[in-house]
Length: 83
Image 1 (cartoon, rainbow, N blue to C red):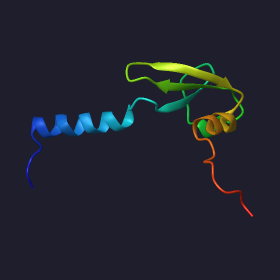
Image 2 (tube, helix red, strand yellow; image 1 turned 180 degrees about the horizontal axis):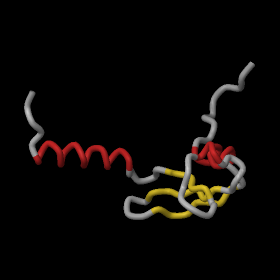
Image 3 (cartoon, one colour; image 1 turned 60 degrees about the vertical axis):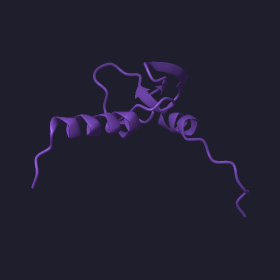
Image 4 (cartoon, one colour; image 1 turned 30 degrees about the horizontal axis):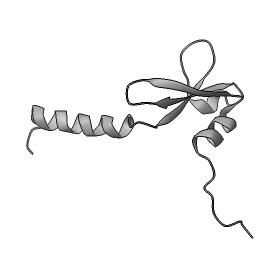
Protein backbone atom coordinates (compact mmCIF):
# COMPACT_ATOMS: atom_id res chain seq x y z
CA UNK A 1 0.00 0.00 0.00
CA UNK A 2 1.41 3.39 -0.98
CA UNK A 3 2.00 6.30 1.32
CA UNK A 4 0.14 9.58 1.17
CA UNK A 5 2.29 12.39 -0.10
CA UNK A 6 2.10 15.88 1.36
CA UNK A 7 0.42 17.06 -1.85
CA UNK A 8 -2.33 14.41 -1.65
CA UNK A 9 -2.95 15.29 2.00
CA UNK A 10 -3.24 18.99 1.18
CA UNK A 11 -5.67 18.36 -1.71
CA UNK A 12 -7.81 16.08 0.44
CA UNK A 13 -7.91 18.64 3.27
CA UNK A 14 -8.92 21.47 0.94
CA UNK A 15 -11.72 19.37 -0.54
CA UNK A 16 -12.97 18.43 2.93
CA UNK A 17 -12.98 22.05 4.14
CA UNK A 18 -14.65 23.29 0.95
CA UNK A 19 -17.63 21.04 1.63
CA UNK A 20 -17.73 21.70 5.35
CA UNK A 21 -17.38 25.48 5.17
CA UNK A 22 -19.27 26.38 2.01
CA UNK A 23 -20.91 29.83 1.99
CA UNK A 24 -24.53 29.67 3.07
CA UNK A 25 -24.04 26.74 5.45
CA UNK A 26 -26.02 27.18 8.65
CA UNK A 27 -25.54 25.88 12.18
CA UNK A 28 -27.32 26.29 15.49
CA UNK A 29 -25.41 27.01 18.69
CA UNK A 30 -27.03 26.39 22.07
CA UNK A 31 -27.10 29.51 24.24
CA UNK A 32 -25.87 28.16 27.55
CA UNK A 33 -22.94 28.55 29.89
CA UNK A 34 -20.00 26.22 29.48
CA UNK A 35 -18.79 24.26 26.48
CA UNK A 36 -21.08 23.29 23.62
CA UNK A 37 -22.73 19.88 23.91
CA UNK A 38 -24.68 17.70 21.53
CA UNK A 39 -27.91 19.41 20.45
CA UNK A 40 -30.21 16.64 21.69
CA UNK A 41 -28.99 17.05 25.30
CA UNK A 42 -30.63 20.48 25.76
CA UNK A 43 -33.49 20.60 23.24
CA UNK A 44 -35.49 23.23 25.15
CA UNK A 45 -32.73 25.86 25.39
CA UNK A 46 -32.63 28.81 22.97
CA UNK A 47 -30.36 28.63 19.94
CA UNK A 48 -28.43 31.17 17.88
CA UNK A 49 -28.71 30.23 14.20
CA UNK A 50 -25.54 31.24 12.32
CA UNK A 51 -24.68 31.35 8.60
CA UNK A 52 -21.17 30.97 7.14
CA UNK A 53 -20.37 33.82 4.71
CA UNK A 54 -17.16 32.29 3.46
CA UNK A 55 -15.09 34.26 5.97
CA UNK A 56 -17.07 34.36 9.22
CA UNK A 57 -20.18 33.12 11.00
CA UNK A 58 -22.95 35.75 11.11
CA UNK A 59 -26.08 35.70 13.26
CA UNK A 60 -29.27 34.95 11.36
CA UNK A 61 -31.71 34.77 14.27
CA UNK A 62 -32.11 33.64 17.86
CA UNK A 63 -34.85 31.02 18.21
CA UNK A 64 -36.62 29.45 21.18
CA UNK A 65 -35.46 25.83 20.94
CA UNK A 66 -33.95 23.03 18.84
CA UNK A 67 -37.17 22.40 16.92
CA UNK A 68 -37.39 26.06 15.83
CA UNK A 69 -33.72 26.03 14.81
CA UNK A 70 -34.24 22.93 12.66
CA UNK A 71 -37.31 24.49 11.02
CA UNK A 72 -35.33 27.64 10.16
CA UNK A 73 -32.28 25.79 8.84
CA UNK A 74 -34.22 23.11 6.92
CA UNK A 75 -37.58 24.50 5.77
CA UNK A 76 -40.18 22.13 4.35
CA UNK A 77 -39.84 21.90 0.57
CA UNK A 78 -42.74 23.39 -1.38
CA UNK A 79 -44.66 20.74 -3.23
CA UNK A 80 -48.05 19.15 -3.64
CA UNK A 81 -50.19 18.96 -0.55
CA UNK A 82 -50.37 15.53 1.09
CA UNK A 83 -53.63 13.65 0.66
